[in-house]
Amino acid sequence: MTKTLRLAFISALIGWIWLSSVQAQENSPRDDPKFQRVEPFQVFDNLYYVGAKWVSAWVLETDQGLILFDSLYGELTDIAIDGIRDLGMDPDDIRYLIVSHAHFDHIGGARRIQDEFGAVVVMTQEDWQMTDEPAIYQEYPKPIRHLTASHGGTLNLGREKLTFMKTPGHTPGVLSTSFTVYDNGYPHAAVMFGGAGLNFEGVERTQMYLDSIAFLQSLDGVEVNIPNHEGSGAVFERLEALTTRKKGEPHPFVDPEGWTKWLEELSAAAQEKMIEERAKL
Image (cartoon, rainbow, N blue to C red; front, side, top):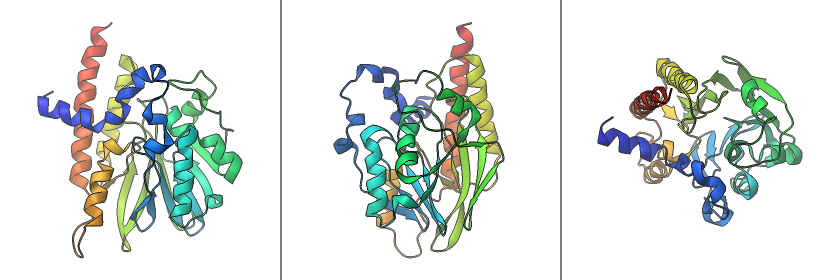
């Protein structure tokens, strides 16, 4: 891997670098809601950011209710709930919570979203199984098992349709989702890759990851990357461009070339990881 590519990859995955030592960081600013709070903002006609600085949460608005992608964790879940309200929506309208994978930063607030707002939680079988095992990195309240997503399965709410894809590697059952976002009524194909980090071990898992990247690369027409960590999609940089966007200019989040380049970077890093993992055998 070239130095430039390595730096790009490190930048893209900065949100995960801390995880290897998180248990030693009892008072990490990652967990501080005051430090992590971000004002919520609209990105597309039907999609809003309600996440924190380091870990994302998104709301897809439909004519039959809300779909929340990931729940944050601990006191950070307040950021997502408050953000929904600040945007003029009602958390009681959350119909589904799509959990990208069962690491605490994405699933930690799921039980609260279930208990307080009656949302149905969707996750893959493999990652539901993780909730019955000791938590990785940090404990979280175990959610009630609801719906299990399958590869190629769909979810319809109102006029919106989500298509689920299993893309394992980061966890055994990473859930990625494709859906449509709209810019002043014009549709764009969006994908959330549910687990891009390389903080796992073993040849088998690394091969899973490489296969998942290859699958995502095979998808036609992806225009928008919806990352579950801000650093994987330069969300705040794109927001700055969005706020200064002039009439007739392209939407800064619509970037098919950026999606392609990002997957190439992830694949290159995973190939290097595979060499390292095989050397351990």
